[in-house]
Amino acid sequence: MAELFWNSDEQRLRAGIRMLVYFAMWGFGPLALHSIFGDWMRDVTPVAWEWLVDVVADLVRLATVLVATVIAARWIDRRPLRNYGLRLDRAWLTDLLFGVLLGALLMGGVFLVQWLAGWVTVTAWWASEWANVPFGFAIWAPLTWFAVIAIAEELLCRSNQLLNLAEGWNPVGRLLAVVLAWLVSSAIFGLLHVYNPHSNWYTTLCLAGYGVFFGLGYVLTGQIALSIGLHFTWNFAQGNVFGFPVSGRITHATSVMAVEQSGPALWTGGAFGPEAGLLGLLAALVGAGAI
Image (cartoon, rainbow, N blue to C red):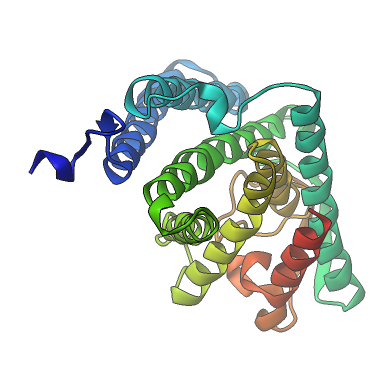
């Protein structure tokens, strides 16, 4: 019975159990601290500084995720932290920058095509969620949020899940194990968003496809930098530069431009945003080729 949970050859928990333990630490601890700390700060902070409350609460959440990651690597997975794709050197930073530029350019292309087709109209510039807060301050809330989301979700779905699944399935052959782990971890990524507004089976399938896209850099390089950079600007540019919904959500109604969408939902993604439209999927294919 113990062999169902413990790998005696490797002297550690089996891959599936290791994933579940990290998922619990990754999800419940940071979420609780983010909620408690954020609520407490809002009670004692003027409304004009609410953007800063969000920034600090998100940084607390990130710190908790990073602590959970160190614990998981050292004592659950029993591996060096660098095996999670966190080897910080010039090549790592170059990949990060490439991902940042790629995500911004791809989403810029999605916006440009919609604008040229007459499917999107810019209704305002420098829109702030808070009426009395300058845009230059307010934009830090979504920027921090999407940076934290990119780091946290890539650590979960790529660094932890893809790596552990590939190791667990290694007996079927290294290449097949990596492909299966890539697909399954991407499916989990899609399911993480199943309760988002305007979500359905189609949008969940689309997001699983974007999980494959975000994971490509990790599969090819063994480092998480490209995936983090791409994930960050794909979301941030989508929601807070071009004003689209991100995975069905309007996260912080602060954006360089506010827009109204029309046109066929098949191409634009409708209320869910570009990730449910053919333009978003085509952008991901172009991005995969660039990677």
